[in-house]
Image (cartoon, rainbow, N blue to C red; front, side, top):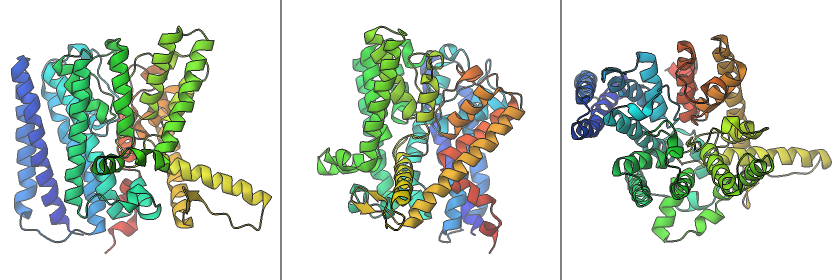
Length: 482
């Protein structure tokens, strides 16, 4: 293991990350909100720390191995989120304590969207912008990690999808090198963000709100510059734009690349993940809207607007809101919340377990039923027209088992801090799926959660974002043996 190389890379990352605090500094000066010094302090601390890590190891040039990749992937989010919390602790009146600042920073960079802040409307403009920017940077980091890095480590949804399942993602490699792939993804991501911002402005948002919300929409993050989220604008046009870009961002960015390169949208309809997600959202929308109509919760038009918006927002793990869905009748809040466990496609900015894993679990379940009827039959699990190897099926079940086990352990941990059951399971599920909204006492914000519960949720956010095994492998003795 090349410890010096890892420290050198972390030092470089920290120094690069410090540059991301320059835009909010300029925003602070533009709006004269008086908190520019918090970002300057954040830059100084990050640069000095980065230099202390980089300079003693600047000549370390060994080739990275797979084990080094696991450490860097885990440390990338951990270190940057910790240093990203600095401005939130230093901006003066209303600044956050260390627990809340770290929680907010992790929530931003992992695109979870859970917040401990109340009175968001009254925060300084530069802090509002900074929260949105954290999500945007985290969203792009997720895509590059999922499409370009985790497959080389042999983990993550894209790893099993690209290497084992034919289709557009395998037949059409993005680019031969990780750096070129990352660059292509950045172009797509930036273009979508710009298009989203322009659409929001045309729909009536100010340039500041449009920029801020385009950041968190394309990242499927859910942070807003208002306590009322997208509901603040009460605009059907803005909601439709938001739905469109949440959907686009929940599809694999590899598909966007192929669509752009081949000037065709047919790959979206041929891709098993994309088809499943569209049908899943359609079915869930029909159930939700009909339930809202039949219970007279809203009139016809508003029931359609709110129902479809909340389904797409929660199921794609964006987490925006136009209504308090936790107060909706019957099983709707629970149904929507469980939908977040499905999440987005592999290689998207969405969270959850990823659609491809759900597809494989369902198909394996059907295979076991068929085996009961035909005990001697050889039945293959197929995605599209191609069989999936049993090793992949086992990997998916292993992931699902560990996912549920961790959910249970962290649920018990949060309840042990004194949180009631509904609040506990919804906050843990929300953090692990990188969703944001929760039920119970955390339906509006997480500010009243006990300190220890917040740290457990921070860990859940990290585990969910790095697809669990990337973090858990670091805690196995075999990983550290020479």
